[in-house]
Length: 105
Image 1 (cartoon, one colour):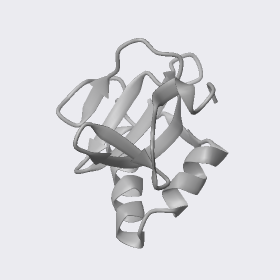
Image 2 (image 1 turned 90 degrees about the horizontal axis):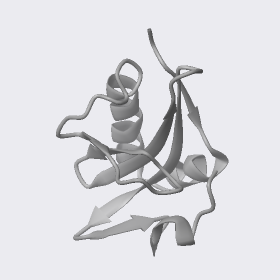
Image 3 (image 1 turned 60 degrees about the horizontal axis):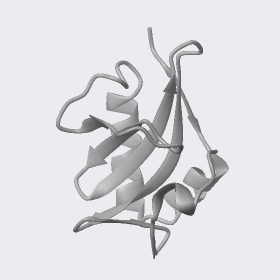
């Protein structure tokens, strides 16, 4: 059963801040990996440690997509889109500090 993909307003703005090439990589990655099995872990899909923001991370090269899955509604909610630089996540040009910066969306 395919999952419906929804994107928060914050994540949509972060996606639009990327280059056209990066936007295409993220959009294709979401379409190919999150529509059918968003909770199946792999090299590209990682379940995150418990936190108040996101349950999963999609890795697309140096790009990261943080998202939650609502199994009851068969819905994937995209929360954060950014770049991984070393051990830092850069979102919209600034270092992301997890739930301190973004309340649960």
